[in-house]
Length: 270
Image (tube, rainbow, N blue to C red; front, side, top):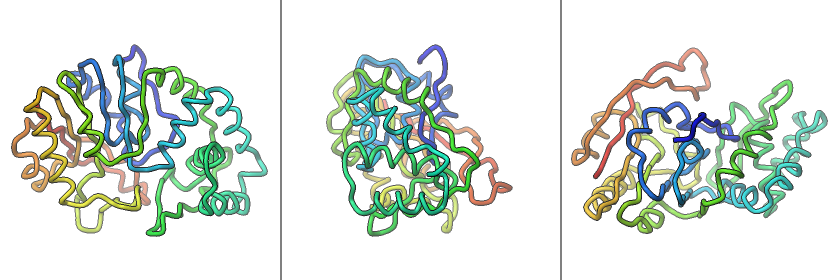
């Protein structure tokens, strides 16, 4: 674990910054593998010789690759989108339309940072056509995370970012590696599902598949930790794992008064 906790530069639903201390006893090894890297909160707070960081969201991986390759040059470019002129509904909609029209490379990555900081509640959400559809957030002065991006660059020197499904990423694990999995959580209720992070969603069958892959890796000397809600469903899914349960506060909610506590768990294999 790093000496001082580091925040990710992206706002992110379900980010694991708050769980870093709880994860610390479990994350030891030569190489850290994350099939659902998200905001990178875990990767940023642990020191490994190497990192393999995957995600199914191509916009997220493109951003990380651009930042890793161009370093400060990209930070300066992304910062150019944060202006008083661009902090308006019309400018936001125009840049979101450009993003959804298929713009590629570093410009797409920079617009992604802009949308993340100017969009409502820091959400990353797509419709079924894979169009980013988060509305304008109406913030007085959106924060540009320069300091956090610079730290990301310094910590990503020995990291490889890949856009791939969790099975492909987990298949690259070898004895002595540690795998941390933060999949889209099972819903606490039938109406609470948050599956639009990637347009593909994440099904019950995929939750089962993830647990199966974790068990297989553990048999080969790879430690795997999976986080999820603590429900009767997840207890059944992770019946072969060591379970560590704890209460956490939910921070992403349309209704601020409903940001209450819910039990989560770590399913530990190996």
